[in-house]
Length: 457
Image 1 (cartoon, rainbow, N blue to C red):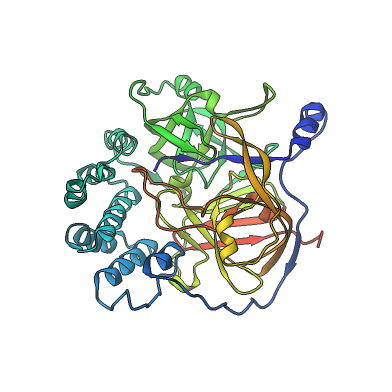
Image 2: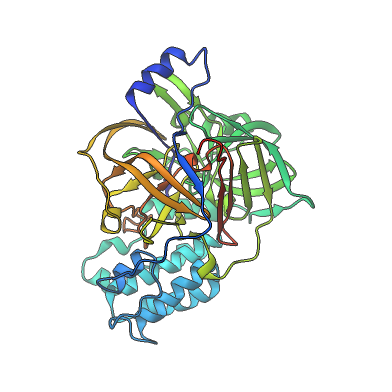
């Protein structure tokens, strides 16, 4: 509940070229050098071994049946509650999590059950219930102060709780809007917010929708100015964010009243290279809106289609899972049949990997080098290796990436209270996988599809 995850990984040479030629030509920073083929069969599943129950949970294998997960025991109940959460049965998940958060004998399980309970509140916009959840008394007695809700989490929940309930008014027909793309390849659509027409980007990596302080001033929205929480970004920068509710946000004929969002300083969403602004953003349609839609990004026809989400698919058929706290995860396969999970981020211009993927897939990774990274709140140099010729299956398509960045870590973000989230991701899935075709995202149904153009196979 505390991340603004815009990221553009840019080769330094391309930065210089963009500054020289930006006024004259259309330069895109999206990887287009992909080899993509349509496949009729998928690799057979690889055998999986987990050291223990928690390792299985972190890698999203909730079917793990080791000796340390006895049927009907506390861990078994927790895994079922987590499965219920992923299936969006929040009431069932909350009932079990509430019991385990106070009664479980295993301290770590109590803490994770409490986290799950908090996430069920976030998923349902039940901010009063979020604020009512107290710390684990045994952990507090042992000196674990992480159980006290962080100022960030409590400030955001308090701000959102003061606003009227959010409502959605769906039109009879699906919404279809013209889509533009900026230099980073982001999808932009026209929205109307309190009567002001603006261009917003569509970003699954932003856990909440966002507007800038200049836009808030323009539409006469009163925004808190003191004691603002700090939220994380895709770099090490943190930025101040005011929790607000947008009185009316129109996306075509779809109307969102009192939609929860962050308001950030305008310069936070201005992206500069050598003091030259290359991208300026009025606002973001974030995951808290996207997860309630069936969203199609049609790059071939420059259109965005938004319709009501479909019926939930059985868990085994889901290619998209929402893991809570802004982590939509997409299922892929390696050539060896290893199951891979990628953080879906339409705010990322290029797909990348986390180094813990090497525990699943053998890759030749170069020595780490510096990569110039633009993110909300500023730019910085990050360290990443490179892996050549990486194969990835998404649905009925096999991708060969000529080179992917491999970043340190296991892809697990920290939640609003500083602890690592449940699931690790093997990398970040960027907008390059659309390959000029179509990307479909339906979190309710659990569907993620790509239909790339295959003319450059």
